[in-house]
Amino acid sequence: MFRICLSPSVIKIVPFWEDQQFSVNLAGNLASAEAKGLLVLATVGEFNPVQLAFAWTRLNNIPILLGRTNFFSEFDVCFYGSQLAFEVCPKSRESGDD
Image 1 (cartoon, rainbow, N blue to C red):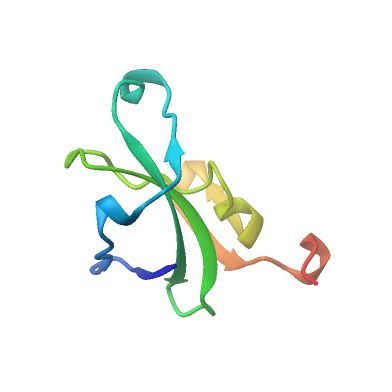
Image 2: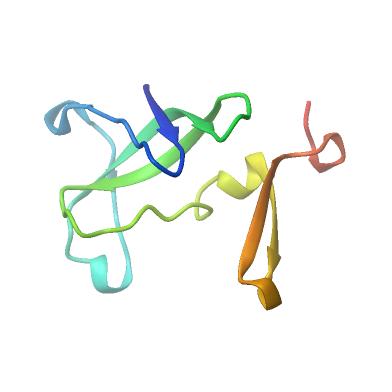
């Protein structure tokens, strides 16, 4: 497992591609890209670290997409469409926190 810090200014992750054992199949326009599964301990904002799963590819122009695997299981996200804004909070106890 690796540690990643998701903040507006910093994303730090330095694993070794060759060491990753778990292959992942991407879809859509990334279907031909080789990808590996990566479990990281992520710190989002000021919240406690959580384990997040990512599909990692060597392509340089791919944005980080949160939510497909488990981001929305760990965080409550509220979208304010009219304000073009969103809010992220740790999941509430009612959301299934053990």
